[in-house]
Each structure stands twice: as structure tokens, then as C-alpha cells.
Length: 228
Image: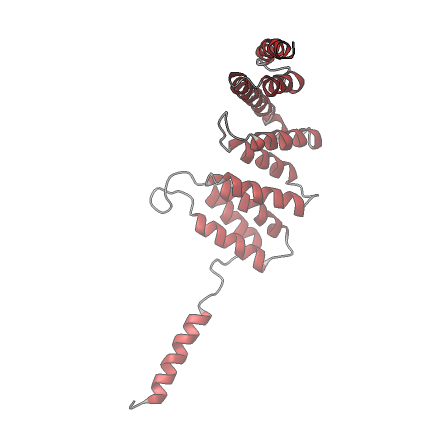
């Protein structure tokens, strides 16, 4: 090597660029960064840059920047909440629910708690489940919507959940009827009867109550025949 000193300088420069290049991606105060997140989340459209849709990578980078640079401001807590909003907008409802529940746990007295409860319940509400699948998500949505109404009765979000609670309860009642009929066809009348009784005990105000009562009579007759 004719000029080893020059080579060392070049290597040093490359290392400096490589290591020192990881600086703050977005500049601004915590409030300005928070506003940038909200602006990005409020965008409508398809893919980012092409049709004006939300750039989710950018949003996550800014949220991380807020938490690192401004950990003791109100915007650091809001960054946790906005993480849930990002996943919700991406329709990744399981991840959204995790973020909202973490926010509720970490910030029990926060002024945005009613919003977090609403979005948590809504995340569970939007998780799909067929008649033959586990409906624990539907129960979770009812739980959080009900807690929202009880804890924050005057919240504007509380006004939006009653119809969702009622729809979820109807779906749960319908599912019990569906499973009860399955057991009934298999001649497992006791298991079927339990499902129908559950409808009458927990969903008696739904349109499925009368059907459950009728089917329960049928299964109880079959049980009586078996025991005689």
C-alpha cells in the first residue's frame, strides 16, 4: 500500500458516517411531533406517497422519537396511546387492543382514558368471529364498553357503544342457539339444554329468547324420555 495513512483516514470517515448517521430523524418540540403524528394519522387514501395514505413507518418513528427525547412530557404518554391508533387504522386489532390496554394500565388517571376504553372495546368488537368460533373477543368488547358507560357516563364515546353492546349480545345469544342445536342433533340433550338455559338467563331481552325457550322444552322432553 503506497499511502496507508490515507487509507486509514478513509476508513475512519466511513466508520464515523456509519455510526454517527443515526441521529434524530424528525426535529421539533414534543407538541410539534405530536401534531405531525395526528396529521399523518388523519390522512385518507391508499398507499403512502402514491395516493396520499398514512406513512405508518414514519408515524412509528416519530412516536419513538417523542418517547426517547421527551419522556417526562404529556406527549410521551400520548405516544403510547397513538401507537394503538396506528395499529387500529392498519386494522391490526389484536395489536391495537394490546396498546390500548397497556395505556389504561400505565395511566389510570389520564384524561384520555375514556377514549382508550372506547377504542379498546372497539378493537375487540372488530375482531371477526363466526358462529362456531370462540366469542371471547365479543365478551371483551361488551366488558370494556360497559365499563366505559359506568365510569364515564357523560363521555361522548359512551353514547356510541349501546348499539354495539346490544348487537354483540344478540350475536352471543345466536351462537348459543347454534351450538345448542349442534348438541341436540348429536342427541347430547343435557349439553344442548345448558346452552338454551344460558340464553334465557343472560340474553332474555334478545329476539333469541323465545327460540331458546322452545328448544329447551324439546330437549327437556328428550331428557325425560331418556330417564323414564
